[in-house]
Image (cartoon, rainbow, N blue to C red):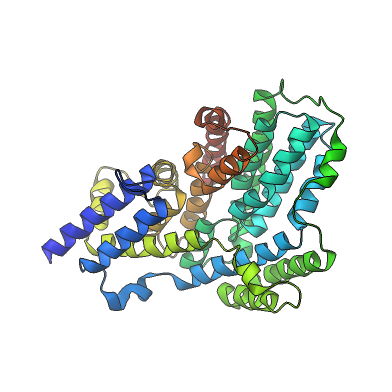
Length: 408
């Protein structure tokens, strides 16, 4: 038994270090691969029995995430994202107003459709439009990533970690947004002025080639399919306010969307981020094995004796900030939820805001950040770690200052 516990601890440490580094030295493997290998090792070593694998995976969270990806895929294939981005690009003659619209649109859509998907769909068309208009793309793309992270904090379905927190904590959709919306809006406004201040000299319109935008080679707009996707979102939010389990509501809507006469189901399902779903499943297994070793409870008990109590919201916020920027926010949340009190919703709300706001500190803190960087690079626009940190650090400081005021 002792041998199994020690093995589980070692597997957890190696896996989380690999996730933090984004690879295992000497191997061509990424974060998802590291997590999968860690999960396999945990099962083979006996840390998680094979007949308990499905029990330790939070299936409702996986089903909710899967369903929301199908809904977002419907909107993407209907050309909704492209049409919306093209519409606001027409405002780029007024760069400050355009910056505001980018952040409002990014944050608003991320609250309902998940920030990773919004960034993936918007970055190519936004980058092309910015280059065609002669605007420096850096401040706008950074604003896109930062605002998507901030906006996603406002709802249970805004990002993967919120979905997990909402499902595990049994949180009500409306009550969650009621608690998180005000600090989210405050942080969004402050972030806009931070970006405006830092990049005021680059917010200059220098071109009249906006006609190029109209012929950009992206998904064409389909009124019927877009209306179908938007109706699905409205119905979903309505169902989330009912006592019906969220995963069942989302699955029902997703199933209806797959019954299409014009869009092949293979095409919709091809846009699902299977890597992210696999990462979630693997992390559940790794954390279950680590928790079974008894070490997490021992660490928390020892910290409590020194006055560091995760039940205290400011301490929980700072620990979340630290772990999210070492391991990324999803692995950090999966670890931290095991220490929260099911009967104190404020702890779960605080974890949701802190883990999401923490994603703006450094480039590696959020998958949405990496998506924007990778997509922009395809068009010759490079965003470095220092570029992101220049905006991300002051935005995160302002975010946590707002959070501390809110929870106090």
